[in-house]
Amino acid sequence: MKNELLKLLANGKQLDKQSRESLTPNKPEETKGSARRDFLKKSALGGGLALGGMLFSSTEDTLAQSTSKVNRNSSPSELKITDMRYIVPMTTVGRCPIIRIETNQGIYGLGEVRDGADPRYALLLKSRILGMNPCSVEMVFKAIKQFGFHGRQAGGVCAVEMALWDLAGKAYNVPAYQLLGGKYRDTVRLYADTPEEEDMTVFSAKVKDRLVTKGYTWLKMDLGIELIKDIPGTTVNSGFWKGSQWNDKPMSLGNTKHPFTQIQITEKGLDEIAKYVDKVRSAVGYDVPLSSDHFGHFDINNSIRLAKKLEPYRLAWMEDMVPWEFTQQWKEITTAIETPTVTGEDIYLKEEFIKLVDNHAVDIIHPDLSSSGGLLETKKIGDYAEEHGVAMAMHFAGTPVAFMANVHCAAATQNVLALEHHNIDLPYWESYVKTVDKKPLIEKGFALVPDSPGLGIELNEEVLKQHLDPKDKSWFVPTKEWDEKRSWDRLWS
Image (cartoon, rainbow, N blue to C red; front, side):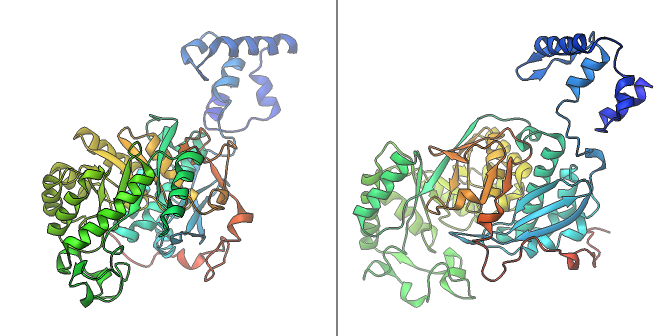
Protein backbone atom coordinates (compact mmCIF):
# COMPACT_ATOMS: atom_id res chain seq x y z
CA MET A 1 0.00 0.00 0.00
CA LYS A 2 2.76 2.45 0.95
CA ASN A 3 4.60 1.87 -2.30
CA GLU A 4 1.50 2.70 -4.36
CA LEU A 5 0.86 5.88 -2.37
CA LEU A 6 4.48 6.91 -2.74
CA LYS A 7 4.18 6.55 -6.53
CA LEU A 8 1.10 8.79 -6.51
CA LEU A 9 2.92 11.45 -4.54
CA ALA A 10 5.92 11.27 -6.85
CA ASN A 11 3.57 12.09 -9.74
CA GLY A 12 2.21 15.13 -7.93
CA LYS A 13 -1.13 13.53 -6.97
CA GLN A 14 -3.14 14.69 -3.94
CA LEU A 15 -3.93 12.01 -1.33
CA ASP A 16 -7.21 11.83 0.53
CA LYS A 17 -7.30 11.93 4.34
CA GLN A 18 -7.55 8.14 4.73
CA SER A 19 -4.53 7.59 2.45
CA ARG A 20 -2.46 10.17 4.32
CA GLU A 21 -3.32 8.53 7.65
CA SER A 22 -2.20 5.14 6.31
CA LEU A 23 1.29 6.60 5.86
CA THR A 24 1.35 8.18 9.33
CA PRO A 25 2.88 6.20 12.23
CA ASN A 26 0.67 5.86 15.30
CA LYS A 27 2.17 8.42 17.69
CA PRO A 28 0.83 11.44 19.57
CA GLU A 29 0.31 14.57 17.46
CA GLU A 30 2.68 16.66 19.57
CA THR A 31 5.44 14.09 19.18
CA LYS A 32 4.92 13.88 15.41
CA GLY A 33 5.05 17.66 14.99
CA SER A 34 8.16 17.93 17.13
CA ALA A 35 9.85 15.14 15.20
CA ARG A 36 9.08 16.79 11.87
CA ARG A 37 10.47 20.15 13.03
CA ASP A 38 13.64 18.51 14.33
CA PHE A 39 14.00 16.60 11.07
CA LEU A 40 13.68 19.73 8.95
CA LYS A 41 16.14 21.70 11.07
CA LYS A 42 18.77 18.98 10.90
CA SER A 43 18.28 18.07 7.25
CA ALA A 44 17.99 21.48 5.55
CA LEU A 45 21.19 22.66 3.87
CA GLY A 46 21.36 25.92 1.95
CA GLY A 47 17.60 26.00 1.51
CA GLY A 48 17.52 22.45 0.09
CA LEU A 49 17.67 18.93 1.50
CA ALA A 50 20.46 16.37 1.45
CA LEU A 51 18.60 13.28 0.33
CA GLY A 52 21.04 11.01 2.10
CA GLY A 53 19.82 12.46 5.38
CA MET A 54 16.35 11.13 4.67
CA LEU A 55 17.31 7.48 4.52
CA PHE A 56 16.84 6.90 8.23
CA SER A 57 13.81 9.18 8.71
CA SER A 58 10.19 8.16 9.12
CA THR A 59 8.06 7.80 6.01
CA GLU A 60 5.92 10.75 7.11
CA ASP A 61 8.90 13.09 7.55
CA THR A 62 10.45 12.00 4.27
CA LEU A 63 7.25 12.64 2.33
CA ALA A 64 6.55 15.92 4.05
CA GLN A 65 9.89 17.36 3.03
CA SER A 66 10.49 15.76 -0.38
CA THR A 67 7.09 16.89 -1.70
CA SER A 68 6.89 20.26 0.07
CA LYS A 69 7.59 22.24 -3.12
CA VAL A 70 5.72 20.11 -5.64
CA ASN A 71 3.20 22.20 -7.59
CA ARG A 72 -0.06 20.44 -6.69
CA ASN A 73 -1.80 22.10 -9.64
CA SER A 74 0.49 20.43 -12.13
CA SER A 75 1.50 16.95 -13.08
CA PRO A 76 4.27 17.82 -15.57
CA SER A 77 4.21 14.53 -17.43
CA GLU A 78 0.51 14.97 -18.18
CA LEU A 79 0.58 18.63 -19.27
CA LYS A 80 -0.79 19.40 -22.73
CA ILE A 81 -1.03 22.64 -24.70
CA THR A 82 -4.69 23.54 -25.26
CA ASP A 83 -4.70 27.15 -26.52
CA MET A 84 -2.74 30.22 -27.61
CA ARG A 85 -4.06 33.77 -27.26
CA TYR A 86 -2.49 37.21 -27.55
CA ILE A 87 -2.56 40.95 -26.83
CA VAL A 88 -0.60 43.77 -28.50
CA PRO A 89 0.78 46.40 -26.09
CA MET A 90 2.87 49.35 -27.28
CA THR A 91 6.34 50.51 -26.26
CA THR A 92 8.71 53.21 -27.53
CA VAL A 93 9.52 50.98 -30.50
CA GLY A 94 5.90 50.18 -31.38
CA ARG A 95 3.92 46.93 -31.30
CA CYS A 96 5.17 44.17 -28.99
CA PRO A 97 2.70 41.24 -29.07
CA ILE A 98 2.46 39.07 -25.95
CA ILE A 99 1.17 35.50 -26.27
CA ARG A 100 -0.30 33.24 -23.59
CA ILE A 101 -0.01 29.47 -24.05
CA GLU A 102 -2.63 27.62 -21.98
CA THR A 103 -2.74 24.01 -20.78
CA ASN A 104 -5.12 21.33 -19.60
CA GLN A 105 -4.05 21.90 -15.98
CA GLY A 106 -4.80 25.58 -15.65
CA ILE A 107 -1.23 26.88 -15.71
CA TYR A 108 -0.04 29.04 -18.61
CA GLY A 109 3.13 30.51 -20.05
CA LEU A 110 3.87 34.02 -21.34
CA GLY A 111 5.99 34.81 -24.37
CA GLU A 112 6.58 37.81 -26.61
CA VAL A 113 6.84 38.24 -30.36
CA ARG A 114 9.75 40.55 -31.16
CA ASP A 115 9.14 44.31 -31.15
CA GLY A 116 7.62 45.60 -34.36
CA ALA A 117 6.49 42.14 -35.51
CA ASP A 118 3.07 40.60 -36.11
CA PRO A 119 1.32 38.25 -33.62
CA ARG A 120 0.43 36.05 -36.59
CA TYR A 121 4.05 34.85 -36.64
CA ALA A 122 3.13 33.05 -33.40
CA LEU A 123 -0.49 32.21 -34.17
CA LEU A 124 0.45 30.19 -37.28
CA LEU A 125 2.35 27.86 -34.94
CA LYS A 126 -0.67 27.11 -32.75
CA SER A 127 -1.95 24.19 -34.84
CA ARG A 128 1.55 22.64 -34.78
CA ILE A 129 1.84 22.57 -30.97
CA LEU A 130 -1.69 21.84 -29.71
CA GLY A 131 -1.70 18.67 -27.61
CA MET A 132 2.08 18.66 -27.08
CA ASN A 133 3.66 18.68 -23.62
CA PRO A 134 5.09 22.17 -23.02
CA CYS A 135 7.74 20.76 -20.69
CA SER A 136 9.33 19.01 -23.69
CA VAL A 137 10.71 22.40 -24.70
CA GLU A 138 13.39 21.27 -27.11
CA MET A 139 11.11 18.83 -28.92
CA VAL A 140 8.42 21.50 -29.41
CA PHE A 141 11.09 23.95 -30.55
CA LYS A 142 12.40 21.53 -33.17
CA ALA A 143 8.86 21.02 -34.43
CA ILE A 144 8.38 24.74 -35.13
CA LYS A 145 11.84 26.24 -35.75
CA GLN A 146 11.51 25.76 -39.52
CA PHE A 147 8.84 28.49 -39.46
CA GLY A 148 11.26 31.13 -38.17
CA PHE A 149 13.79 33.17 -40.09
CA HIS A 150 16.15 36.07 -39.53
CA GLY A 151 14.88 39.35 -38.10
CA ARG A 152 11.28 39.73 -36.99
CA GLN A 153 10.25 36.56 -38.83
CA ALA A 154 11.76 34.62 -35.92
CA GLY A 155 9.44 36.37 -33.49
CA GLY A 156 6.75 33.70 -33.36
CA VAL A 157 9.07 30.76 -32.75
CA CYS A 158 10.95 32.68 -30.05
CA ALA A 159 7.72 33.80 -28.36
CA VAL A 160 6.52 30.20 -28.13
CA GLU A 161 9.91 29.05 -26.81
CA MET A 162 10.01 31.58 -23.99
CA ALA A 163 6.40 30.77 -23.06
CA LEU A 164 7.36 27.09 -22.81
CA TRP A 165 10.15 27.88 -20.33
CA ASP A 166 7.69 29.94 -18.30
CA LEU A 167 5.31 26.98 -18.28
CA ALA A 168 7.95 24.39 -17.48
CA GLY A 169 9.30 26.48 -14.63
CA LYS A 170 5.83 26.83 -13.16
CA ALA A 171 5.18 23.10 -13.56
CA TYR A 172 8.38 22.14 -11.74
CA ASN A 173 8.26 25.13 -9.37
CA VAL A 174 11.71 26.45 -10.34
CA PRO A 175 12.94 29.59 -12.13
CA ALA A 176 13.59 29.31 -15.87
CA TYR A 177 17.35 29.82 -15.40
CA GLN A 178 17.47 26.71 -13.22
CA LEU A 179 16.19 24.61 -16.11
CA LEU A 180 18.99 26.07 -18.27
CA GLY A 181 21.64 24.80 -15.84
CA GLY A 182 21.58 27.33 -13.01
CA LYS A 183 22.75 30.91 -12.64
CA TYR A 184 26.11 32.65 -12.70
CA ARG A 185 24.82 35.94 -11.29
CA ASP A 186 22.07 37.42 -9.11
CA THR A 187 21.90 40.66 -11.08
CA VAL A 188 22.32 41.43 -14.79
CA ARG A 189 24.10 44.61 -15.88
CA LEU A 190 22.01 46.77 -18.21
CA TYR A 191 22.99 49.29 -20.85
CA ALA A 192 20.67 52.19 -21.60
CA ASP A 193 20.29 54.39 -24.66
CA THR A 194 21.47 57.98 -24.47
CA PRO A 195 18.64 60.55 -24.66
CA GLU A 196 17.61 61.95 -28.02
CA GLU A 197 18.13 65.66 -27.36
CA GLU A 198 19.70 68.26 -29.64
CA ASP A 199 20.15 70.75 -26.79
CA MET A 200 23.35 69.55 -25.11
CA THR A 201 22.37 71.17 -21.79
CA VAL A 202 19.20 69.07 -21.69
CA PHE A 203 21.16 66.08 -23.01
CA SER A 204 23.76 66.35 -20.22
CA ALA A 205 21.06 66.61 -17.57
CA LYS A 206 19.35 63.46 -18.82
CA VAL A 207 22.65 61.60 -19.01
CA LYS A 208 23.35 62.57 -15.39
CA ASP A 209 19.91 61.25 -14.44
CA ARG A 210 20.69 57.91 -16.10
CA LEU A 211 24.10 57.57 -14.47
CA VAL A 212 23.62 59.11 -11.03
CA THR A 213 19.92 58.87 -10.21
CA LYS A 214 19.04 55.64 -12.03
CA GLY A 215 22.46 54.03 -11.55
CA TYR A 216 23.20 52.81 -15.09
CA THR A 217 26.84 51.92 -15.73
CA TRP A 218 26.79 51.51 -19.54
CA LEU A 219 25.27 53.69 -22.28
CA LYS A 220 24.73 53.44 -26.04
CA MET A 221 24.11 56.23 -28.55
CA ASP A 222 22.74 56.37 -32.08
CA LEU A 223 25.42 57.75 -34.37
CA GLY A 224 25.96 58.25 -38.09
CA ILE A 225 24.90 60.06 -41.23
CA GLU A 226 21.40 60.79 -39.91
CA LEU A 227 23.11 63.31 -37.61
CA ILE A 228 24.66 65.24 -40.51
CA LYS A 229 22.07 64.87 -43.26
CA ASP A 230 21.12 68.58 -43.08
CA ILE A 231 24.71 69.86 -43.09
CA PRO A 232 25.90 70.64 -46.65
CA GLY A 233 29.11 69.02 -47.83
CA THR A 234 29.14 66.15 -45.32
CA THR A 235 28.18 63.25 -47.61
CA VAL A 236 28.47 62.25 -51.25
CA ASN A 237 25.53 60.77 -53.21
CA SER A 238 23.04 60.94 -50.32
CA GLY A 239 20.83 63.33 -52.30
CA PHE A 240 20.05 60.56 -54.77
CA TRP A 241 18.34 58.51 -52.08
CA LYS A 242 14.92 59.50 -50.80
CA GLY A 243 13.87 58.99 -47.22
CA SER A 244 15.83 57.78 -44.22
CA GLN A 245 17.52 54.51 -43.31
CA TRP A 246 14.22 53.43 -41.69
CA ASN A 247 12.25 53.44 -44.95
CA ASP A 248 11.50 49.84 -45.94
CA LYS A 249 10.03 50.43 -49.41
CA PRO A 250 11.78 48.64 -52.30
CA MET A 251 14.76 50.52 -53.75
CA SER A 252 14.70 53.08 -50.93
CA LEU A 253 17.80 53.93 -48.87
CA GLY A 254 16.45 51.96 -45.91
CA ASN A 255 15.89 48.86 -48.03
CA THR A 256 19.22 48.97 -49.89
CA LYS A 257 22.10 47.09 -48.29
CA HIS A 258 25.16 49.09 -47.31
CA PRO A 259 27.59 48.14 -50.13
CA PHE A 260 25.08 49.16 -52.80
CA THR A 261 24.31 52.78 -51.86
CA GLN A 262 27.69 54.35 -52.80
CA ILE A 263 27.15 56.98 -50.11
CA GLN A 264 30.45 58.34 -48.81
CA ILE A 265 31.26 60.55 -45.83
CA THR A 266 33.46 63.56 -46.53
CA GLU A 267 36.20 64.79 -44.20
CA LYS A 268 33.81 67.51 -43.11
CA GLY A 269 31.22 64.85 -42.34
CA LEU A 270 33.70 62.86 -40.27
CA ASP A 271 34.64 66.01 -38.35
CA GLU A 272 30.99 66.83 -37.62
CA ILE A 273 30.31 63.32 -36.31
CA ALA A 274 33.47 63.48 -34.19
CA LYS A 275 32.31 66.80 -32.70
CA TYR A 276 29.06 65.17 -31.63
CA VAL A 277 30.83 62.18 -30.08
CA ASP A 278 33.17 64.56 -28.25
CA LYS A 279 30.18 66.32 -26.66
CA VAL A 280 28.56 63.03 -25.66
CA ARG A 281 31.79 61.61 -24.24
CA SER A 282 32.35 64.84 -22.28
CA ALA A 283 28.85 64.53 -20.77
CA VAL A 284 29.23 60.83 -20.00
CA GLY A 285 32.89 60.74 -18.97
CA TYR A 286 35.40 57.96 -19.48
CA ASP A 287 34.46 55.80 -16.51
CA VAL A 288 31.36 54.53 -18.33
CA PRO A 289 31.41 52.31 -21.45
CA LEU A 290 29.81 54.14 -24.38
CA SER A 291 28.62 52.05 -27.33
CA SER A 292 27.41 53.27 -30.75
CA ASP A 293 24.78 52.15 -33.27
CA HIS A 294 22.71 53.10 -36.37
CA PHE A 295 25.42 54.56 -38.60
CA GLY A 296 23.45 54.47 -41.85
CA HIS A 297 23.96 52.56 -45.06
CA PHE A 298 27.48 52.95 -46.39
CA ASP A 299 30.25 50.50 -47.29
CA ILE A 300 33.19 48.99 -45.39
CA ASN A 301 35.65 51.65 -46.59
CA ASN A 302 33.62 54.41 -44.99
CA SER A 303 33.00 52.22 -41.94
CA ILE A 304 36.76 51.92 -41.41
CA ARG A 305 37.35 55.66 -42.02
CA LEU A 306 34.65 56.59 -39.49
CA ALA A 307 35.86 54.09 -36.89
CA LYS A 308 39.43 55.38 -37.11
CA LYS A 309 38.22 58.96 -36.74
CA LEU A 310 36.44 58.03 -33.50
CA GLU A 311 39.18 55.89 -31.95
CA PRO A 312 40.33 58.63 -29.50
CA TYR A 313 36.94 58.38 -27.76
CA ARG A 314 37.39 54.69 -26.90
CA LEU A 315 33.89 53.56 -27.79
CA ALA A 316 32.83 50.25 -26.26
CA TRP A 317 31.74 48.99 -29.66
CA MET A 318 30.57 49.94 -33.14
CA GLU A 319 27.41 48.04 -34.02
CA ASP A 320 26.00 46.83 -37.36
CA MET A 321 28.36 48.77 -39.62
CA VAL A 322 27.38 46.45 -42.49
CA PRO A 323 24.73 43.69 -42.68
CA TRP A 324 25.49 40.71 -40.45
CA GLU A 325 25.67 38.15 -43.28
CA PHE A 326 28.77 39.72 -44.88
CA THR A 327 31.17 37.72 -42.72
CA GLN A 328 34.30 38.54 -44.71
CA GLN A 329 33.52 42.27 -44.73
CA TRP A 330 33.05 42.16 -40.98
CA LYS A 331 36.42 40.46 -40.61
CA GLU A 332 38.08 43.20 -42.69
CA ILE A 333 36.54 45.94 -40.56
CA THR A 334 37.43 44.19 -37.30
CA THR A 335 41.03 43.67 -38.39
CA ALA A 336 41.44 47.27 -39.55
CA ILE A 337 40.18 49.15 -36.47
CA GLU A 338 40.87 49.27 -32.73
CA THR A 339 37.28 49.75 -31.57
CA PRO A 340 35.42 46.46 -30.82
CA THR A 341 32.85 45.40 -33.43
CA VAL A 342 29.39 43.99 -32.81
CA THR A 343 26.57 42.42 -34.83
CA GLY A 344 23.85 39.78 -34.46
CA GLU A 345 20.53 41.28 -33.36
CA ASP A 346 18.77 39.98 -36.49
CA ILE A 347 20.36 36.52 -36.68
CA TYR A 348 18.17 33.44 -36.27
CA LEU A 349 19.69 30.29 -34.71
CA LYS A 350 23.28 29.50 -33.76
CA GLU A 351 24.71 28.50 -37.14
CA GLU A 352 25.32 32.05 -38.42
CA PHE A 353 26.80 33.09 -35.07
CA ILE A 354 29.20 30.14 -35.35
CA LYS A 355 30.43 31.52 -38.68
CA LEU A 356 31.12 34.92 -37.13
CA VAL A 357 32.91 33.40 -34.15
CA ASP A 358 34.96 30.89 -36.15
CA ASN A 359 36.17 33.65 -38.49
CA HIS A 360 36.70 36.11 -35.63
CA ALA A 361 34.67 38.47 -37.78
CA VAL A 362 33.45 40.48 -34.76
CA ASP A 363 34.77 41.04 -31.25
CA ILE A 364 31.38 40.70 -29.53
CA ILE A 365 28.24 38.85 -30.60
CA HIS A 366 24.93 40.60 -30.02
CA PRO A 367 21.87 38.32 -30.27
CA ASP A 368 18.32 39.45 -29.65
CA LEU A 369 16.70 36.55 -27.82
CA SER A 370 13.42 37.29 -29.63
CA SER A 371 15.14 36.59 -32.96
CA SER A 372 18.01 34.25 -32.10
CA GLY A 373 15.82 31.29 -31.11
CA GLY A 374 14.80 31.87 -27.51
CA LEU A 375 16.43 31.13 -24.17
CA LEU A 376 18.12 27.79 -24.81
CA GLU A 377 19.37 28.62 -28.31
CA THR A 378 20.78 31.95 -27.09
CA LYS A 379 22.54 30.22 -24.22
CA LYS A 380 24.05 27.77 -26.74
CA ILE A 381 25.21 30.74 -28.81
CA GLY A 382 26.79 32.37 -25.78
CA ASP A 383 28.47 29.17 -24.66
CA TYR A 384 29.99 28.58 -28.11
CA ALA A 385 31.30 32.14 -28.22
CA GLU A 386 32.76 31.82 -24.73
CA GLU A 387 34.66 28.69 -25.70
CA HIS A 388 36.29 30.71 -28.51
CA GLY A 389 37.11 33.79 -26.47
CA VAL A 390 34.26 35.99 -27.70
CA ALA A 391 32.01 37.97 -25.36
CA MET A 392 28.24 38.39 -25.70
CA ALA A 393 26.02 41.44 -25.23
CA MET A 394 22.25 41.09 -25.55
CA HIS A 395 20.00 43.29 -27.71
CA PHE A 396 16.46 43.94 -26.45
CA ALA A 397 13.69 46.49 -27.09
CA GLY A 398 10.37 44.91 -26.02
CA THR A 399 8.10 44.63 -22.97
CA PRO A 400 9.00 43.24 -19.53
CA VAL A 401 7.91 39.76 -20.67
CA ALA A 402 10.77 39.37 -23.16
CA PHE A 403 12.96 41.37 -20.79
CA MET A 404 12.60 38.73 -18.08
CA ALA A 405 13.26 35.95 -20.59
CA ASN A 406 16.52 37.75 -21.38
CA VAL A 407 17.33 38.14 -17.68
CA HIS A 408 16.99 34.39 -17.06
CA CYS A 409 19.13 33.61 -20.12
CA ALA A 410 21.77 36.17 -19.11
CA ALA A 411 21.83 34.79 -15.58
CA ALA A 412 22.55 31.31 -16.96
CA THR A 413 25.24 32.36 -19.47
CA GLN A 414 28.74 33.22 -18.25
CA ASN A 415 30.17 35.54 -20.93
CA VAL A 416 27.36 38.14 -20.94
CA LEU A 417 28.58 41.75 -20.77
CA ALA A 418 25.28 43.62 -20.54
CA LEU A 419 21.62 43.53 -21.61
CA GLU A 420 19.96 46.44 -23.41
CA HIS A 421 17.11 48.42 -21.84
CA HIS A 422 15.44 50.43 -24.61
CA ASN A 423 12.45 51.85 -22.70
CA ILE A 424 14.10 53.71 -19.87
CA ASP A 425 12.08 56.87 -20.59
CA LEU A 426 8.71 55.10 -20.71
CA PRO A 427 7.31 55.71 -17.19
CA TYR A 428 4.75 52.89 -17.17
CA TRP A 429 6.99 50.25 -18.79
CA GLU A 430 7.86 48.33 -15.61
CA SER A 431 4.19 48.44 -14.55
CA TYR A 432 3.22 46.18 -17.46
CA VAL A 433 3.97 43.24 -15.15
CA LYS A 434 4.00 42.33 -11.48
CA THR A 435 6.86 40.27 -10.12
CA VAL A 436 5.86 37.19 -8.15
CA ASP A 437 8.49 37.94 -5.49
CA LYS A 438 7.33 41.60 -5.25
CA LYS A 439 10.83 42.88 -6.07
CA PRO A 440 11.41 45.57 -8.72
CA LEU A 441 12.49 44.50 -12.20
CA ILE A 442 15.43 46.90 -12.13
CA GLU A 443 17.46 48.36 -9.29
CA LYS A 444 20.20 50.95 -9.86
CA GLY A 445 20.90 49.95 -13.44
CA PHE A 446 20.83 46.18 -12.85
CA ALA A 447 18.06 43.67 -13.49
CA LEU A 448 17.26 41.52 -10.47
CA VAL A 449 17.26 37.77 -11.19
CA PRO A 450 14.14 36.28 -9.55
CA ASP A 451 13.88 32.96 -7.76
CA SER A 452 10.18 32.61 -8.59
CA PRO A 453 8.91 29.83 -10.88
CA GLY A 454 9.12 30.30 -14.64
CA LEU A 455 9.88 33.85 -15.73
CA GLY A 456 8.74 35.10 -12.32
CA ILE A 457 6.13 37.59 -13.55
CA GLU A 458 2.40 38.04 -14.05
CA LEU A 459 0.71 40.58 -16.33
CA ASN A 460 -0.74 43.79 -14.92
CA GLU A 461 -4.06 43.84 -16.75
CA GLU A 462 -5.08 47.32 -15.57
CA VAL A 463 -1.97 49.02 -16.97
CA LEU A 464 -1.66 46.97 -20.14
CA LYS A 465 -5.24 47.70 -21.21
CA GLN A 466 -4.39 51.41 -21.19
CA HIS A 467 -1.57 50.95 -23.72
CA LEU A 468 -2.80 48.44 -26.30
CA ASP A 469 -2.30 48.92 -30.02
CA PRO A 470 -5.06 51.32 -31.20
CA LYS A 471 -5.62 48.99 -34.17
CA ASP A 472 -6.05 45.89 -32.00
CA LYS A 473 -7.35 46.37 -28.46
CA SER A 474 -8.45 42.73 -28.04
CA TRP A 475 -7.57 41.04 -24.76
CA PHE A 476 -6.67 37.35 -25.09
CA VAL A 477 -9.71 36.57 -27.22
CA PRO A 478 -10.24 33.02 -28.58
CA THR A 479 -8.16 32.14 -31.66
CA LYS A 480 -9.99 29.06 -32.92
CA GLU A 481 -9.32 30.03 -36.54
CA TRP A 482 -5.69 28.98 -35.92
CA ASP A 483 -6.52 25.55 -34.45
CA GLU A 484 -6.56 23.54 -37.67
CA LYS A 485 -3.35 22.47 -39.38
CA ARG A 486 -3.76 22.73 -43.14
CA SER A 487 -0.39 21.85 -44.62
CA TRP A 488 2.18 19.08 -44.80
CA ASP A 489 5.27 20.65 -43.24
CA ARG A 490 7.99 17.97 -43.30
CA LEU A 491 11.17 19.23 -44.95
CA TRP A 492 12.38 15.83 -46.16
CA SER A 493 10.97 12.76 -47.92
